[in-house]
Image 1 (cartoon, rainbow, N blue to C red):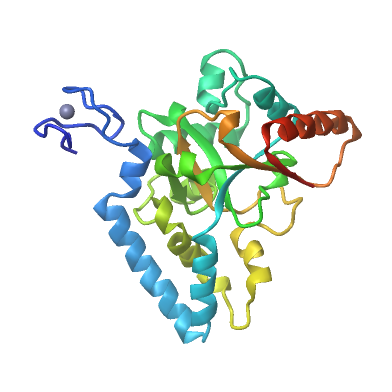
Image 2 (cartoon, protein in one colour):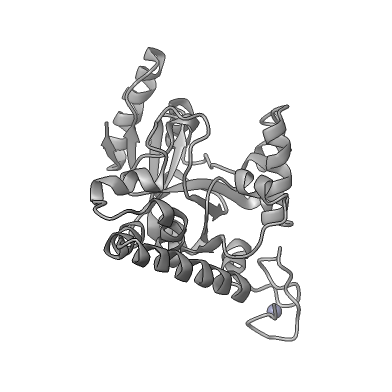
Length: 276
Ligand SMILES: [Zn+2]
């Protein structure tokens, strides 16, 4: 794209700042999700999905689900101990997996999925994968417990301008696409309802009510090892001051109780809402 400030300079897909004037040109993941090819391809998918719902007499349910997801939030699942480390220090930041491994703070796992994850991330975020943190869309404040039994809701106002929304667990979709993803599976924050409704359309049936929508957005089986969800990609770091709410899945391991107690104390001080 051309520099929006001075023009006449090619700002590359991976660059947030213009190499010529140094000014910010938008978050690369958000820019990508807003590209004409992406928007047009999603519009085609959306029209077909909605027409399918009309044909099944589930038009009202489709529109209702789209509306519900249009007010969904950014939620991350983490283990209690990790949440506590973030909350306890003003200096703590959550960074991407690649920043952690790059800094020698974490070992990459020696599994096939981790290898594929690296390829998928390089395809999706060429040149800036180390700047992306992963989250999910949630309408009930819960994230998939597979990734940790503490769910953190982040303040939309602080993250949505740097967030893009993706069809599903990106490594799964990239694998099925042989790591060559067609456009139309990602979008900007304000269109998350359209993307989620397009994805869920075949499962949107007449008579579906509000209570059924949570299970359309995220795997209802809380113990699923490969949960389905709509993924959110957030550019940049995360600080505890961006957390608006914390929710716990039922306790499974007693040794996490002290961490939960301490998280509650800190949240009370900081006026962060906690729900069990
Ligand atoms: Zn410039």
